Image 1 (spheres, rainbow, N blue to C red):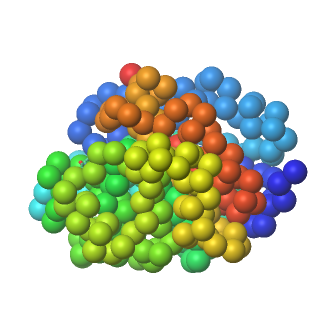
Image 2: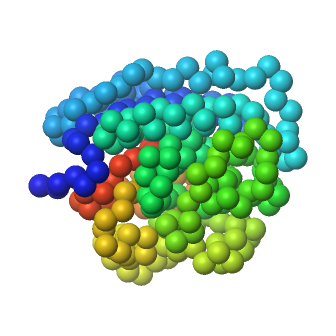
Length: 282
Ligand SMILES: NC(=[NH2+])NCCC[C@H](N)C(=O)O
Ligand SMILES: [Mn+2]
């Protein structure tokens, strides 16, 4: 039996059908609705979690009429407003000692979820499970899609972008670790290297096995297993044969079991306070 260090056995589920952080128009917003339809809440209850779900957030209502690019960044106002709303939802669940489970949506939402976690748990660490590093800055991004940039904002290296002033809870680079990387741009590799951010790529998963990788990841960011953990899981970390439901599939990903193992091992620490699951259904 896992004993929980920060939360009661309650989970607040935050439905975020949102795809404004990337350029494809279909699908990413359907993930959360499908997860609920397929019985996620009942499954959580079967695991003896008390569940609170306040319906899917109507995020499209936050879409501004005009939203011209800021530099290269696409739909900056929309993404910022949505992420800010999501950060408040996360914060409110965490303050009530619940685990905040956010269902996305594209990964720009993590700007909000992680900010929400940091505002309640400033010493939280972040485990980012993804094929991509999502650490481009507004300067380095080629696509201009904000789903490729959230981590740079969260580290405070994005510079001042109008509208994003509310993103002021910064995570230190020692508290961030990646698992599953295999599609990282040169600009991103440079940032990872410069900041010395710990990252376990698929190469490491092959070499050490997932058990060891998760242990090393936890040792890096949470050596005493006494800090709150935010797990941000992009389903594109999984191999496309397991999870084709992503806008950005990359071959050579985690197996079904490896993906589950990460979540199980993080849960076992008793430190997990927030989880993001980012899916696309097409
Ligand atoms: N969360 C994701 N699927 N991110 C993909 C990012 C792709 C690319 N690195 C970019 O900056 O646009
Ligand atoms: Mn991602």
